[in-house]
Length: 126
Image (cartoon, rainbow, N blue to C red):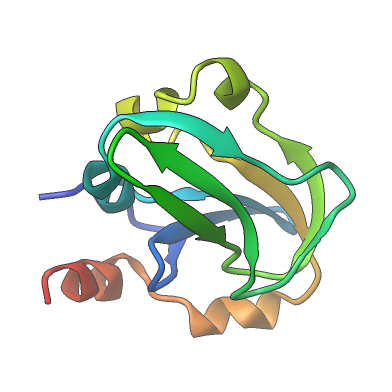
């Protein structure tokens, strides 16, 4: 069973967002990294790029497949996780400890459209 963490918000496309002081740390869920297999490359946006809830902001490539990344919230990218450039497999080691982008959230009400841990677990078990 994939690990699901309380206190995060989850999207149906298997991204999570951890919210801290108006910033969102966005990454892929444990379920997603299991489905992808060994991650070999992460395509990330640039700092200052705008992301929109439900829209693509990059991609994760694994030995098996490539998967688009969709932002769970809208905002401005303030940081990208540069460690993933050299060691993309960090996503396999711990998907929740290794976020992909940090955004300044422009509309926190969008979080209401996302699932909590319990709802996401049920979604994954369907």
